[in-house]
Image (tube, rainbow over all chains, first blue to last red):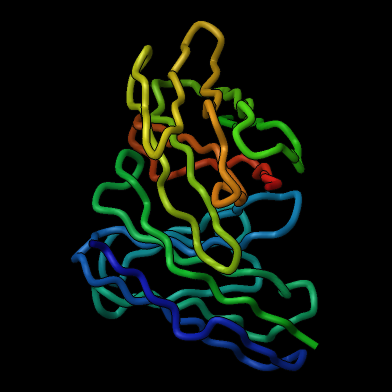
Length: 113
Length: 113
């Protein structure tokens, strides 16, 4: 079974802090995704990576950056956390983008004070 | 652009009741369609999918049929259980060369014993 793990389930940070969220998948998937999930808005794509060191912006990339130095690991970085980035963050991976099932991690609930 | 619209919740049913959660989509190409389920405190997991018109996806007693003529992919189950209480997301992926998965806003289902 595919396993996608995220570094933290819950995180509390202060405004202005730099925040790192890490995601690791164990199935050699090419594609990895970061979403945020907010009530009434569903899932919104922040960034997508289709290969090591390759990334593309999703629908809401402002205030975020990503890093993919190794195939199995995809990091989301909040350069200077703000209260409007309080949310649930979900990482996902898939073998072939746009066609195959996405496999999700358990999520990180981030609270920015 | 592509979009997914699903019925708003919450949906509250008694155990053994019939479930329908409506999902309609707009897409320029021939998307694959998915239903994901999110149990409390967890990430999303695939429930079922269909990749072409008239396909029926099924899993755990849930079914959905890809209806191109009505651009719909409604989720149904004949007899719900308390353990089906979760949030259900309809999603599509555009197979016309993009990476994007588009998710609906989610429908919360609560099943009472």
